[in-house]
Image (cartoon, rainbow, N blue to C red; front, side, top):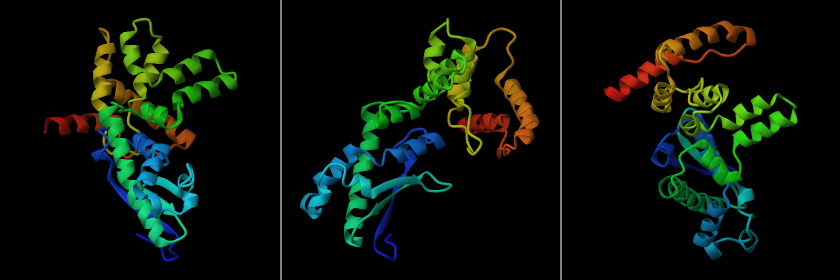
Length: 246
């Protein structure tokens, strides 16, 4: 659609689940960040060629006109282009949407990228885990804090490493819990499989452990003025399991 002043065009680019196998809130945000990608810009320049003014054919020029965001309460990514005319904005937005979808499909299908950290590595050359660990170290927090932050995206490594520290393993497992805003638990099977592989005789069941977490959260959330999630962890765990067997 084109706004009244003719300077802004927004193009919704399909449902993220069509290009991402696991559209959690964090991954949707990472996918939105990939909208402003130099490879996508190059593909748009190659497609539009002489239809672009000379000043927009320079590397980086189109990137300054484009932004992306996830539309509220949906899996749709909106691409917005600010340009000197409605026709130019519409042409760039349409070409950008096509190039962006091809780029994300290639990341998932060809390169096997499937996680938030993979997307961050592709987009920025570093992950939020690495950034968090650096911040913890710069703040002079205990070294174990930085280790747990850096390792929270390394669940598979923790499962293979018998010498992995319990704190690192616990934080890596907790990274696959749902966010407070999610209606379904997209990583439920990953969490359950890892939990059972890590469990030892006498360990509580996943439901028992999650029930304890729910109870403790209800105790400290009002003190910290943290909003209550729409569903408890136990509800999401059991609901997602029921959906899988339906």
